[in-house]
Image 1: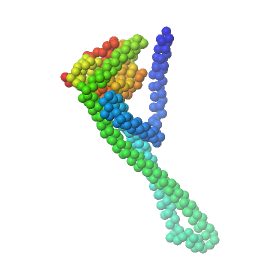
Image 2 (image 1 turned 180 degrees about the vertical axis):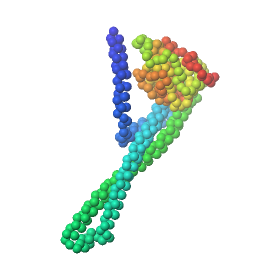
Image 3 (image 1 turned 45 degrees about the vertical axis):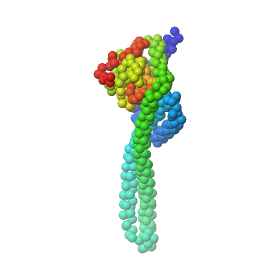
Length: 399
């Protein structure tokens, strides 16, 4: 009874959030987009520095592990983390570039306004100078001494004072407008330089990412070459994968027992989890080093970094990393139906999150025990693994 009350309470909270969150989104959207500030860019740059620090720490660990055959699995995990940090840095640079470009667009508008103000005061200054020419090419003092009478001198003095005062006011405003325009222009040039620098850094990160991915894949190939010398290592990884598969089945059965067996977000059918239709390894058996082993899903030969879609709507029940599956996500679709997506380079959903069919939940990678970029895709129904190709059409086989 207590468990049932707890379940109803959780469902009530979830329903409340589903109502409140869209309302908040409408309110925020109605208020207009928030202006980008330097603090936003500073925060991104601080995050970038932290990512770089984490990368350097990981690189030290990787260097320390090189050459240790028994630590290959641990080293692969570190390389997977390093790849993830590099991808985060690339995204961070993209965010910096986007915000800097927004600032540049705003500053260009402000500079145009400041420049126009400067030109306005310059025109007034030139007009004032032309008015001053009424005094001739002699000094103000000569004009005063040239007065024919005292009353004439007083009138001339009033005129000179007014001209002088007006000139000084125009000059002050002209100088202020010019300083404002120059300040904005300097800031504008600095931000343009920062954009170019961020783009260059991002290109370096992309090159570094390619190198890191290749190094991670070479490490698995190295493990493959050492299988005959160290059977225990590969057996441990295979045992870990099967143990994980059994734990996933246990988790699936437990979850089904806890809920009513339905999921309102599910459509009841499966779609392709990728735009790729090329199957590199079948269900039931997987050829590894000339030996067929148990394979609980199919491998889809999608390109690195491409999107992975939720095959059906539901709730994320697992979003984590393992030495065998790498980064993987598991989704419950209700009625004893689950899907699992493994070897991701990046996970984009968290445990407990509701997802829609076709939603991007991650990116293709080669993390964990993987020889190259692909998606390991599993379907579980009623506590048993089933062949995904029974539900997916239009595929191309590599065997």
